[in-house]
Amino acid sequence: MKNSLFPPAVVAGLIGGVIVDAFLALVLRSSPLQIWQYVASAIVGQVAYASLWYAALGFVVHFAVSIFWAVLYVAVVNAVGQTRNWIVGGIVWGVLVDAAMYGILAIKTGISFTQGFEQGLLAHVIFYGLPVAYYVARALHQKKAEHSTT
Image 1 (spheres, helix red, strand yellow):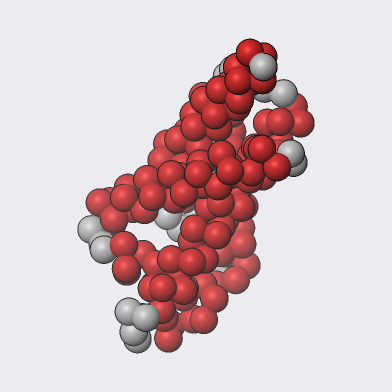
Image 2 (cartoon, rainbow, N blue to C red):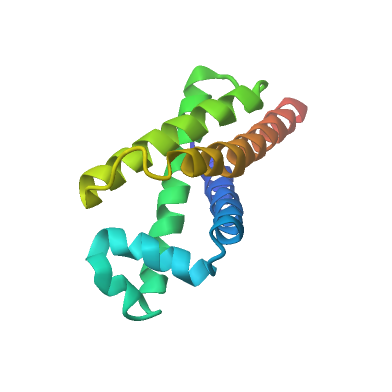
């Protein structure tokens, strides 16, 4: 990926991470700290619920993963050269992210792949994939416009 594409990907990942956290906090009636403890529990197990300090680990992991998926999205979109239809891109990417994340979680924790699937799909498509795709499309469009005027 070109270096100029990395900053928009990081910003998109942060935006997606914040929006999906807000959605989950509202729907689950949980604080972001509890959500981040849940994320940390996938790494350290149930001990993550013993102290709010594990929320810091969950925070770092959550946003690292969110940025990773956004960077990968930018790489794919750049390789395909398709940013005009960001809505389809966001929906497809959200489905892929959800399937991958649930697959990893199911393998790691042994939960059923379908447990919470609808909520996760909604979170990853509407509140992660679409905001990431929108921001990336706008940022890449702006970069192209800047390059065409120079």
